[in-house]
Amino acid sequence: KITPPKSLGTVGVAIVNMAAVEALASASAKLRNFTGLSGEEYDRQIRDLVAHCRHLLSTNALGSVCRDESTLDRFHPGRDSIIYLFLLRLQIQTLQETSRGTLPYDLLPPGKLWSRAVRYLEIFDPVQIRYAGREFRQIIEYIGQASQAASKAWLYLDYLRYFLYGGMVYMALKEWRKAFHFLSVVISAPTVGSISMVMVEAYKKWVLVGLLANGKLFSPPNVTSPNVVKLYQSLAKPYVSLAQIFERGDMKKLVAEVDTAREIWFMDRNMGLVSQVVNTFSGHALIGLRKTFAALTVTEVLEQAPYLPADAMAAETSIASFIMSGAMNAALVHSSSQTNETMLRLSGESLSSRMSYESHMQIHLKKEGQLMTALMGSIEEINHAMGLSDEFVDSSKGQTWTTSSDTNQGPGEDFGLDMDEDIMGG
Image (tube, rainbow, N blue to C red; front, side):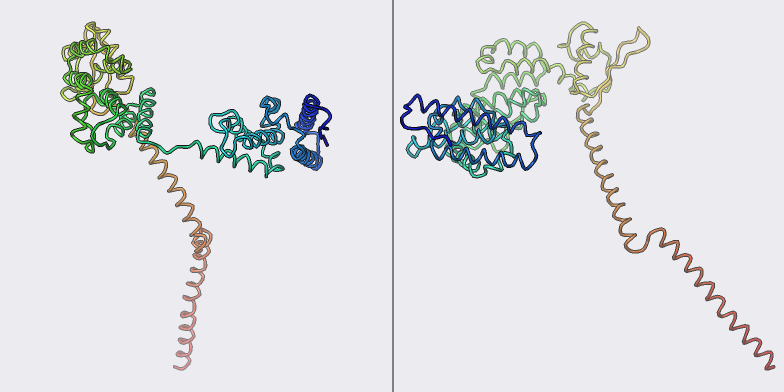
């Protein structure tokens, strides 16, 4: 038992406390190499360690350690779970005693002790902790109290920011339809009178993402009030103008509009989205050709879409890259003759949607196959239970034939006897 005598003074007490920490480190190091210990020996040593730690805390033998966070750095929360648990609990209790009823800052997120406690709960050794359940439960209670004290109810703007940032995440992943949905939630949120800047920012991105996902400007969701729609359109005029030019299919005006409002795109931090809108313009225009044509030569495509590169080879490369992206179901057919031009064959269904349908059908067929397999297994079990197995049917057939033979022979024999009796009688 380590109890610092009063006559040692401050320096002496610190030395004794550090000696106690060294002793704990040595005991914990022995437990790390438990492979050479039997189960009973390991159980005995770890129980002794827990009892020793509790004694040190009860006698205040670790007085100077309770405020020194560097002491925890000497122990690993996973390998030295018991020592780390007692030292962490000691420091938390000391802070609570000095905070006069309020939770200390270090115990609240993102305080130092909070971070250490959360890290400990992630990697602690459950085998060691089962010997110190009481102390472990106290740590969990401390963390629960701190998390409840720091938690705040979601505000209206928090709700809007969640969906705005979620939409931005999907933008980074180029999952435009999911981003469009998240932004739609923001712009259609209920409001009274004015709208927030978060909603305006979401509307600007919503217009651009709609062009990237579908190639056209959509009306806001039906739940959006007309007054709010007017506010959106007035506060995001450059974006609405860009979308209208995009729908008309005028590449020159589109580029001019982008250059004219370049400062606005940069100020709103939407220049990246605007650049992608320009890059996908030719692709969406090609998709529009399938409404009129089933097949065209590359030269005819250039006549219908003058925004493509003037050179036939460059235009063919641009078309091929768009087809390979999966946005359009089409094929470039090269002729064996050098005199014939390359043909672009268009299909009404996009490659991505067709692949999505095929994958859906594969999943559906797989599920149906699993159901059929389970059904066949159930039928076999029922047949066996009801005596309809193949063996039972075969044996039943044999019994039927035997019974039939006996039945046929009975009347014949009786008939023969009657005939003899009649003859004798006659």
